Length: 282
Image 1: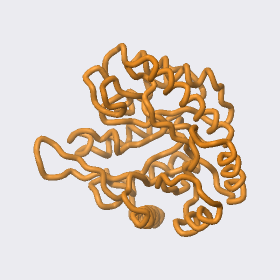
Image 2: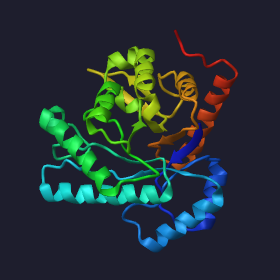
Image 3: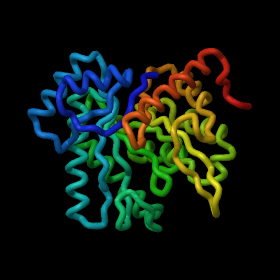
């Protein structure tokens, strides 16, 4: 696996980014330019990446391709197509978005998120994005979310089958799918399903931890890797068993220093795994 950090800073100067990658010790990059970045900056960024010997793993989109408003939906799909084309130009592992929501919040829960109509919209939007670009070096993927498709490995696999495009891959965020006590409590079986069902199609992974908190009815919060209730050395072992040098990112942290702490924690977990102290629990 190759470790990276999704700290979300835009590309500024080559000197600043050289310092960041040295300081963090990252092994793979999240694109610091987007579909909205001007062409001179994109070209300069690509030239800089080529000097580092690192690879771009993800180009993010983060919009709503199934929005109720047709104009908003068309704009979102066009931007996703542009981002996918950028990812292909960079040779990125994947272009990542979410499937989208049917309510006021583009990334939030709405009762219609799990309707048959919504599922069909998701399938159609993914096809429309991929078919317009026809990428040859990358794929389009959806980040799982707790309250929209796909919110389980089974849903993701079915979506792969129904979209039926070679350029549709899996971005695995296992923590986002732990949306209830059953998956938190029986995490080994849940993680087994994630990797057994989706393993061949995974292009990148967000590596996070969650903790069950006090409070009713059920509060599960994202926390720094190693500070929650997930058996992350077992996750790392599952990643290694796939036999591919997959990009693995820490993310959603408030401060730059938190990323250094998180990366150090993952490296310590990886050392545990490599010494045999991180066996998957029975």
